[in-house]
Structures are given as structure tokens and as C-alpha cells.
Length: 183
Image 1 (cartoon, one colour):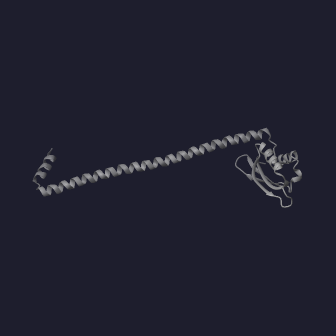
Image 2: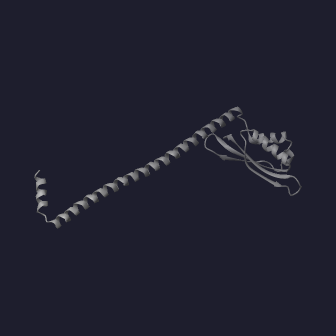
Image 3: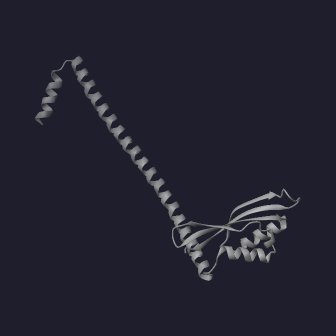
């Protein structure tokens, strides 16, 4: 109570010009303090919104990774099931059977090149590259269709060119692959 009376006496003793100067100073201090509070408030809101955006981006990335992981897990289970059905499967033997079935063994120009690519887990990717010559479009389509029937086989590369030696026939370089158990 005494502090309030002291302030009242102090204000009462001021002349008008000095009173307005003090009043302007107090109002300026109040406006500055209010502006500082408002700035801090919006600054913290902006910072929190940025953090929310970053967390949301990370959440979406984790969701995408989890979806991919589930797909990979499903595909691994499918591959395991395929290999449990026929554990002795080899891509070279299968390809020779297909060529024999379609009467294309005479079209093979060179011996098959087989290479292996290491992968994590219990399988490796086996690549078989071969060249076939003097094929017509029907034979090529039948070969690709037959290869497509086997879920283990997939085409990695196919290069079809017109034969330079004979008209109306194709030269084909085909690379197929399959996952096989590591040896």
C-alpha cells in the first residue's frame, strides 16, 4: 500500500511535460514487452510446426520402408516355397530343356555363359547369357513365352537384331536369371 502511495505522490509532483515523458516511456516499455512476448510465441509455434513437419516426413519414410520390408518378406517366402518344390533346379538345365522342347538347339551359336551374383541370405542370382541366330519372330515369342511360364526365371536383357547374313531372320542375345541356393 505504501508503494502505491509513493507512486501516486511521485506522479502528482511531476509537471505535465515530464509526466508525458514518463508515460511515453512506460507505454513504450509495455509495447516492447508485448511485442517480445508475441515474437517469442510465434517463434516457438514456427519451431514446433517445423518439428512436426520433420516428424511427419520421417513417419512417412518409415511407413514406406515398412511396406517395402513386408513386400520383401513376402517375396522371400514365395522364393522359399518355389525352391522347396524343386530343390535341384538349375537354370542351365532348364534352358536346355526349353530349347529342346521348342526345337531351337540348332539356333544356339555359342556355349551359355553362366555367372553368379552374391546376395544376402541363402540364394545367389545365376545369370545365363546365350546367343541364338537365324530365329524368326514366332520362335522368339514362343521362347520368351515358355521362359515366362516358369516363375523362377526372369529376363534380364534381350538384344534383338536383324541378321546380317540372312534376310528376314533375327539374331538374339538373351540373358536370363534365376535365384538358386548358394553352393
